[in-house]
Amino acid sequence: MESGKPKRIFIVDDDTILSTALEDYLTRKIAHRIHSFNCGEECLKHLTEKPDVIILDYFLNTVQKDAATGLGILQLIKKHNQALRVIMLSSQESCDIATQTIQQGAEQYVIKDEQAFEKISRMINET
Image 1 (cartoon, rainbow, N blue to C red):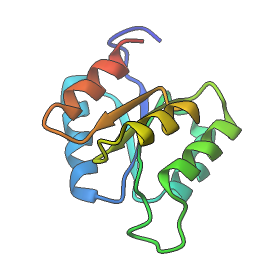
Image 2 (cartoon, rainbow, N blue to C red):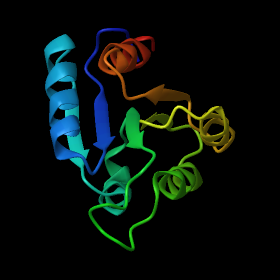
Image 3 (spheres, helix red, strand yellow):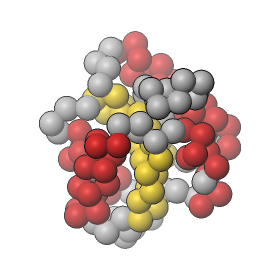
Image 4 (cartoon, one colour):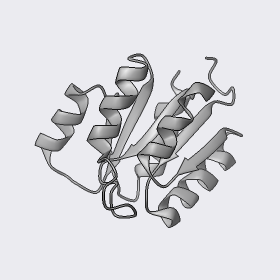
């Protein structure tokens, strides 16, 4: 896709405050078409909408006890479409977790810190 062209972005995070803030930030940067989900299973149901990028939280089952984890959802997304861009977002600073998500198909691993939104915005707009 052209840089600057609006992209269809899915945000999957059970922290609604963070996902709303990220959605607002990305909408201000470039008028993206953004859809937020508070669980991975809802995101999976909408993959036919062909998102350009999925921003996926590593820890996801605080809203639904039996819901799949972020890593489990990542595997299902990649099973659906190996080429789909997924940016994993987490408060975990563990190199092992970051490596694991990249090995499972995440394009990038972003730690939830004060620069996270800007990093995500740059990654989305790079393509």
